[in-house]
Amino acid sequence: MNIILLGPPGAGKGTQAQMLERDFGLKQISTGDMLRAEMAAGTPLGLNVRSIVESGQFVPDPVMIALIENRTLQPDCAGGFILDGFPRTESQAEALDAMLAARGSRIDAVLLLEVDVEQIVARLAERRAPDGSRRADDEPETVRRRIQVYRDQTAPILPYYENAGRLRRIDGMQSVSAVHEAIVSALGLEK
Ligand code: B4P
Image (tube, rainbow, N blue to C red):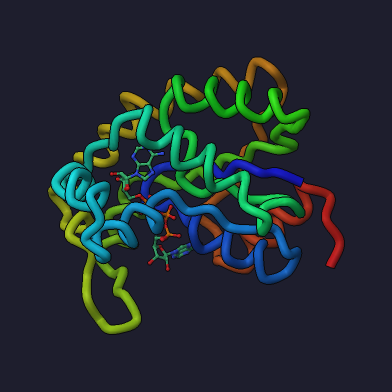
């Protein structure tokens, strides 16, 4: 099963993708984590995208599409994957369908985690890495920019999935475990 988790920044996509990977063995593919790993390793890609990511803007579509095209071909994705942070634009959504169709594969479910703006700002103000550090893009001013970028560039892809009857909405304002249960039920998975 291949799944897309959609939602605004801080909606809980990463949190829920980790739980699905733990319980059902689907591979989490977090584009945010992939970019941060490139930045931390100081690769040419990481150096190129650092200022974009830290300012809350989107990395160019061709870069992200190539990353996902390669990542989903890795053997650990053969049993199914969860896309956490991709697609984020219409062009990414169309490229994803085309690349999977060319392999005789497809996306089986698209889930939208719905969370309101106040909750997003509060959650990201609290977020800490295990070592206590904070992400540069979690500063309130940058979070507001990320929410605006989501509204401008990601929200318009919702009709792409909704019109094809592929989008399922999940109340992301509930507790982490309640959101997980809602997702498991929407996907018809059994533990
Ligand atoms: P991401 O890393 O994907 O950032 P995110 O939206 O913050 O994460 P998420 O929704 O996963 O929230 P989380 O579970 O952590 O992207 C970062 C940047 O990378 C982007 O701004 C962009 O620059 C770049 N990028 C990534 N993908 C791209 C693409 N496809 N195209 C272009 N650019 C791209 O949850 C947040 C917090 O809430 C956590 O602290 C968590 O503990 C808490 N939380 C979660 N669920 C909760 C709940 N139910 N109740 C209470 N708290 C909860």
